[in-house]
Image (tube, rainbow, N blue to C red; front, top):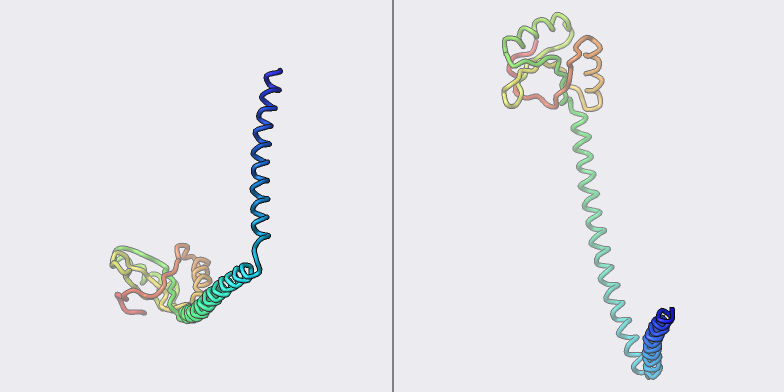
Length: 175
């Protein structure tokens, strides 16, 4: 136990000495600051003010650049909104009521479905890579109504109805 107390007192003395050294160093620094004359103080203040002015000018330039970028982005955003709005207004969406890889079979389905839906114009189109024939309703829909149109055909018994955007190459004439 005596050994532990001795070690504790020894360590406490060591830490106390370090703290005393730090206090002495801080007091010396404070004394040196108090001996600054008015000229030195004025020069330091002027230098600090100049630094602040330079930083202020830099920040103003950054803000102007950011504001300019925001204005440009808003202009781009508005033009993109207009593009999307125009696309939605266009009747560029079509209901697909049947698809097949065989042109003969899609022709046969067209004949059958023309009897089932005599008031609709049907057309056959081929996909872009020419691997499928799609039987579509010839009337185009806009982006806001295509979902309702597909649902309407599903309600009429065409359970696999879906939609495509824009028309690929039309391979046969419409009804």
